[in-house]
Length: 484
Ligand SMILES: [Zn+2]
Image (tube, rainbow, N blue to C red; front, top):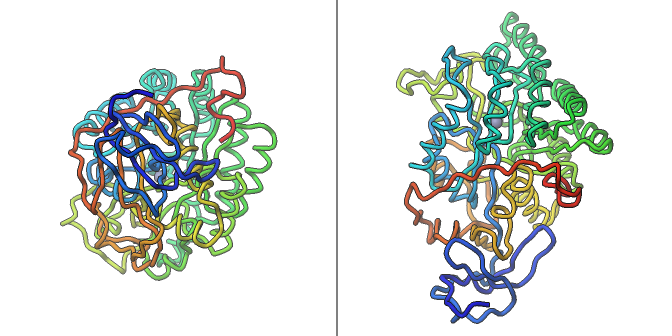
């Protein structure tokens, strides 16, 4: 114990970790947590942050987001910060699907430059591998840069995004060889395109046909196929945005066979159904589609039981007008025409879910008794940090970890709405939802980020965190990918 004064003491709160909840105080000096324990004298720090009556959580690590439309990293990270997120791991891809000649390494470097200048939150990065990317060259180079996770799309063949199976298998082999991890968007793209063509030919292009054009069987099939390839390649696998209840059986089987398999779901798949699509059309268009109430319940069951390991936001910030433009490009908003008559199949995929994610998960999960708060901290903070090589600097409240923390007041009742959010996207599918509990204070590396409802941190203070690769030399118990 040093006699030198700490900068902050976060006092009187209930500290939440994956293992449980304890009444402890936290001392912060510089960028780091220097001590945690009960009844630390307040005069040991210059500034007292009162957390009494509230929970203290590690900052949320959002490992699924796409800040490249109306919201780039600047406004995405601003919005995320208000939602109790302190670390973001965006997906970055080359522009080769649109005929450019750049590489994924160049795209990641561009992203890091932009985020260094404009992000409000610390960040890491996942690489998206497209069919046109040279995986033999790019995968080892990216891992060397600290980009250790590689997402591949099993769908969207006509947009140049689908990775053919043989190339996916090879990319998995390359990733696992150098200590990386594969990620997949698991839906069967050929079948989706086939069904979309059929519905379109029959003139059935309204919102009610969307879910039917992307049925659950195509997710179940692709999860099974991706896990099979990962088993053959010996590669850890993270499956993003699980939505269909039947995938739990597939996870059970492959996890039981020893595959290092991690499942993610999102707040929208925990709380919303296809009714949103019927009510709001293109605004609710996401892939996989919103499904049914029993699927929401199954996702909660998966989170509680350990079959599903994380919650990510899948944030993609579009203005309402952009949702109707189609083509999945940023496109000038003024050219658009929010045509209710246009085909649902031409609308853009994606929605903004980050700022509301923690509040929705707390309300629907903890307040309704579906998961414990420690389990929520595990799936929103600890597990994503562990899986992507950021732990224990991120995702943990322990001595020596980064002083990234959130004070969450469980007694604040508020209504989620687009008016209250801080991104450029101008709608939320959670509009009008009443929740109990709100992040009221956020700190990152010893700097106050959110206080009194305001952003206190300047842009450009954020840092890139390279993912630590999996080290085969570790004993199994110390293995990065075990025990999450
Ligand atoms: Zn996504």
